[in-house]
Image (cartoon, rainbow, N blue to C red):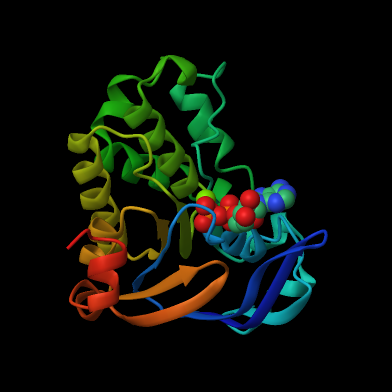
Length: 234
Ligand SMILES: Nc1ncnc2c1ncn2[C@@H]1O[C@H](COP(=O)(O)OP(=O)(O)O)[C@@H](O)[C@H]1O
Ligand SMILES: [Mg+2]
């Protein structure tokens, strides 16, 4: 579904991604794990076309993403939920969700997607008139994911959905990612929570200072000695 070949990217003179190869097949949960600063968010920003690579190819269902603007990437069905939620604090839950369905293809599916979001997140239904900015961190993350689903994604890009959440919410968010995947949405998840994300991933990539240093199934990597030492404190 998504195929990235030899992606190189720099912020000005600072090179942060080196020859990244990454694939996501339809129906998978794929995770990119790595420490703070490894280049996880930058990888997603390249896919979403928020930044432009120096070189390399990226295709989605055969469409060359490097020729598209950000909004056209969304129209292809690739939807990013950004790091730090970035919800609209002065808008209600309902208004935030509606903002997610602004593209024509999503507008037609608005009622269906709203129903899915409220099934996944009953809390959002209860709070539909509450201002986004007054919700808790965990609720804002639900809202950010809900808003992403309103864009009718084929591939959902999730940037550190568990960051800053209480342990209970962390478990909840990973369960919800599994459920979204069951509903037919392919997932590319980037996370510092290596254990939880490997646990739910079909396949994973380990990013260290902008390079893919390991790849394999989630189970393989959970049992990998380097991963155990470097990320799992074992
Ligand atoms: N807008 C930016 N301008 C310059 N450097 C940046 C910018 N955003 C991120 N970086 C740098 O790029 C590297 C990768 O960052 P990032 O992709 O955010 O890592 P991660 O998401 O894995 O924590 C880091 O060294 C970071 O400091
Ligand atoms: Mg990041």
